[in-house]
Length: 189
Ligand SMILES: [Cu+2]
Ligand SMILES: [Zn+2]
Image 1 (cartoon, rainbow, N blue to C red):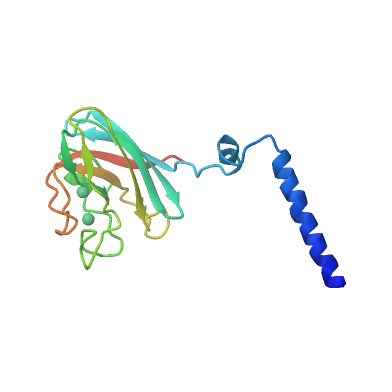
Image 2: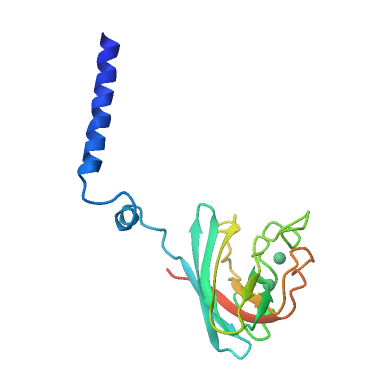
């Protein structure tokens, strides 16, 4: 009998919870759900400049449980496939050698296809249209902005777009050619 009464109480609690949800004017998904679980705020940004120093895009950077979320847009790269990477120095002086090598705290080799890879700063290629802005969104798994092995160390960091495709294998930069655009990654707080 005692056990039976416990079950009864549990069912009563479930019923009460259910009733509260049904009577709520707010839907379970949509704006109300978003308000209940606010997204993690953007923690760093970059203004992307071309070889002439003109701004051609921007990006935001947010630490998430999955890694570093990178969201942005860029224009003026011309039609084609372009390698993109997080580089290990926060300086964008044309022709952008100043941005240093790929962010690589683990001492790996370049490329998603490399048996000894990949650099933490390796990102998927972008395929840009002949004109207009191109939006991109990536998650760099295992990368975080600050702290031990964080992206933004004493040398800072940058995001770099290359003239050609990253083959995801050739060390140290996937054979992706010259550097077309660069943005210094700056913490927002
Ligand atoms: Cu690069
Ligand atoms: Zn790399």
